[in-house]
Image (cartoon, rainbow, N blue to C red):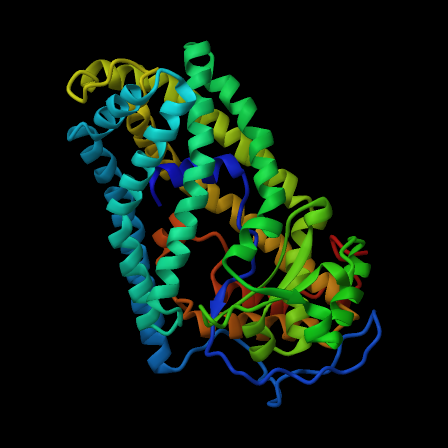
Length: 449
């Protein structure tokens, strides 16, 4: 992830609240719709009956692949961080940012027009320099059967992402430097305040405007009325307002073998999305559990809590950036041809600091996310209890499928888990699903009474 992408991610102030994302061989066989009523879960969709799960298991061949892939991803995460720093250092050392600033200033004396020249050049330079890591990641996903996206489609998606990123980040960087010039001592606070509504706006618009640029969506009710009715029953029990008109089928199989079902947005943009690969690989009760997990994030307040946590983190990062950028520019600013903090050319230096702060804070972010994901697992078990026979076994089957197709490591590196895992490891999630049963003990469930 490049420096600008880190800043954008912070400004959006959202966490990717999705179940253990997985990849599976796509089957074109989609279950025939069966009529059902809200409050009941339709029979299984796949033709083969689900196997009983007692623990997370993989075949010897897939175990080896999963373990190797996990080690590669762990190394890539560490290498990617170092490489991002290297890219920013090269831009500073070769004075590319200073050259872009000089070019921008030669075109216009107006700051907004300067931003229109400087920001796209800097963003594209960083992202093109980091493109080899993205290409290798896509090559790796294709090699392990996790991606089926053709290279032409992948490049087009990258291009669309660049266009969106350039537009959004150019505006953000223009605002940032306008605030720095207006208040050199309080810019970090004022820009933080400005970033909050911008992040909320992006979060609101993402499912309606940005996501459809990359995937095709159709009403789920047209594709699978039985699944829609079952999801409606779960949503009603959860007390959420997501009518069938805001449940969507997503054509994921053209790019990925991954399985997913998620809830996203808020207000009028809140919606349920189910991958077509999920419908092909999972039965209806399993999909209902996965979606119940996602619904739990909303019912349990994880979205506002996550936004608040992200806002607090962003506040800290900006403050630390303010406290440290002066020393950095005093030490190396002249070497990099940077005139001061209000100089456009100082942006890579500020991004370098924010990249370091974000990486150091990653274990905290990961732990926060794993806690929320565990609670959502529990909520999914509670909200589907009574709707789905043997809901604990159904949840375990869901995790087994997700882990199998995603090649989730059965024995993950504890350091990898500590630093980067946003979800509990699949073996732990299956064990919890099989053992969580307050009803048989005469106890009241914690979240769904």
